[in-house]
Image 1: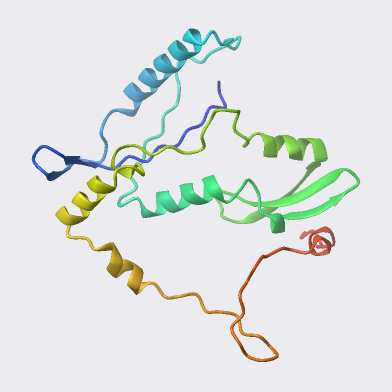
Image 2: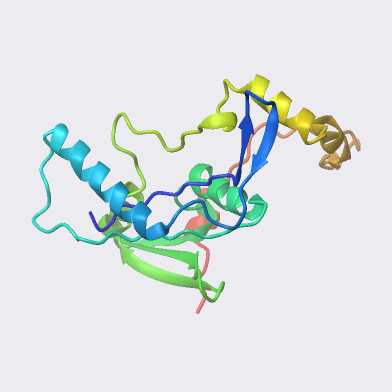
Length: 206
């Protein structure tokens, strides 16, 4: 139970469908994080009991809920997007795999500096498998006006906030295409792949 971790991004506003208004929340938080921890713990244990799941030998009486104000939420959504869809570890971060040992690099969340670590192959696989969801679980869920079936509500919000997404898309600069060294024509990238030798022979930084 101590390893249970969930992320949730919640907007501090809501659409009033009755009066067609955009309602915003005053202050930074919707509710007390201490009360949220108690309610989430109770609902989680109740559902586990209903599904007749085995409880661990020790269950903490107090669960930790960390609520943070993230402003407009741009940085939080970018972080969660990378966390959810980029994968557990990039191929270029696996520095070597020899003699049953795997050396990889990671970024320290506090110092933002890259560090290296060497573990056994079994321990490395266990670290990767901890990010694999059990059967029937989904990695991300969207509710409210963020749900894919809420296109009408999103159009209403854009109208109320006078936001035109087409203007934002037109402002984006297209990615420059790679030119052929022989004829100078524009090339199309079909697939990217890091050669295995570049990963296996890459020196481990000291």
